Image (cartoon, rainbow, N blue to C red; front, side):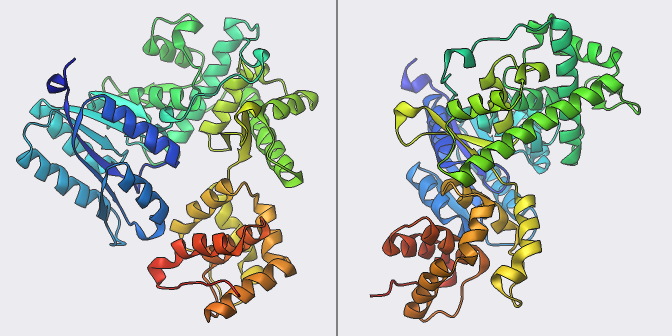
Length: 443
């Protein structure tokens, strides 16, 4: 295909709604770039609490549109106005790439479809408005751009022997989890939307391998087995849970939840005790502790850990030495971070300090992940006297009486990890720049 024949692309990214890690953003942008010629690329967000991401996206070629307005949907309105303006000024654009899952864009997506231009939608399917993917020409899960997981041992990719009957019942329970997950976001579990979420949470799911001709036949079986109900006529059919769940589905659901919780707990315990656990060692330890992932529907260990990652319980990352394979880190939800602050903010930070704003809960979660730190370790650093002495000396040198909880937590983590003062101050200053505060190291 010649360069002239490639689609003319425009990217509109609602960062407030969809984002991941820098490596995912880079891989996604490269994939988009390979599919055509990018005419314009915009990313919309309040960039003050996202300084590092702003630098990364700018380097990738995005025009950063700053939305300081704290009102709900401010980014959505601005992004919609840019799309409409682009439609008028760049009629040669043949494919619009919208990175969002917000239902406010359904009308605009429908208008693009009526105009005959292609729409490539990229989002986290779990928090995507039900009807939005159906309006797209192409759909991608943001997490599909993460690097694939290589098998660290041959047996990690060996499929366990399990009957199709048992496997069907386990996927029936997985489908119930999908319905619950979508419902929690306030969306209705439409047929197409549920399929995207099913594949996102369970990357190895394939209805044809279970003996079904397609997704709809699988849904019919699941309804006949009382795993779900289908309400309404196509294309407006939505999935719901039966009023009374079968004892078998309740039992399988409890076993799956316990297995994922156990994996997350072991990952956190290992990191508390020393360096991050390798995928290989974690798999061996889980086996030794009696976890049989194949009994809860995962034919390979790699499928099990990938599904745990999709649920936001762990993160699989390359080891510092590429020959060591992958490591596994715990992931803390913003809800758990908030719960910790609500319980500890007065004790750790002082009586006059309030719980940080919700926007910073996710940032703290990301900082813990980036620095390979557990929540327990962060608390230890915040209470450690030697860490506190260096922290206070930096504040005294900088003539600053105190820092907000997020920047204070970051400083204590970096000090506790043993970083050089210059590197600590540089990192914390990047987060303080919107406040006009600059730290300096003691001489």
